Image (cartoon, rainbow, N blue to C red; front, side, top):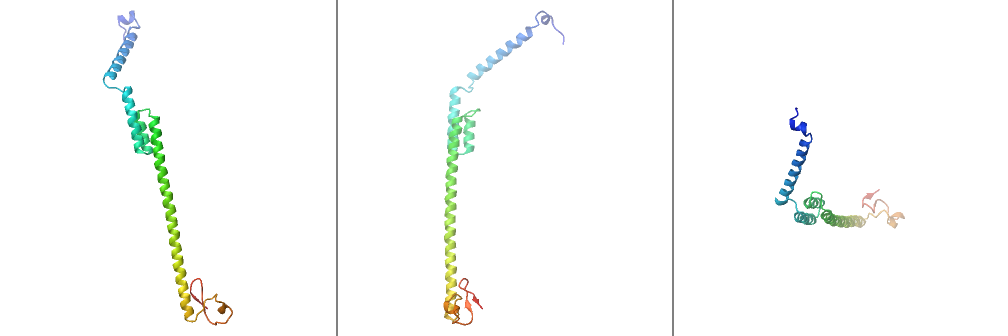
Length: 163
């Protein structure tokens, strides 16, 4: 690179020219941004309100994040907080529903088990009664235990004939 006569006479001229050009460029960009609809305060406030509304309406952590991102690139703490609050409320309702469902299922299962046990006990009692009618006593019958009734007996727990 060779130096021109102007560079030799005034070595700072190119440096000053670059500063002037940079300043002009910055001014042009700022003016263009202002007149071409850049983010003004009203636009930003509107975007934040939209973000808050989207976050609250969604009611999920994803909605809260969307509300934060829609509000502005930096994020709107209020929209995020409202969306987060709605998300936790939704999760709490879901948790209550699951707990209620588990309790209901448990009670239903216990009721069904009790009904099955009662049916089984009734079946065993019927079998013991039929054996007694045929002359076969229950093994815990006092007359059988005293030896007054000889032979086999019926198990009171299962209704099976025992020797």
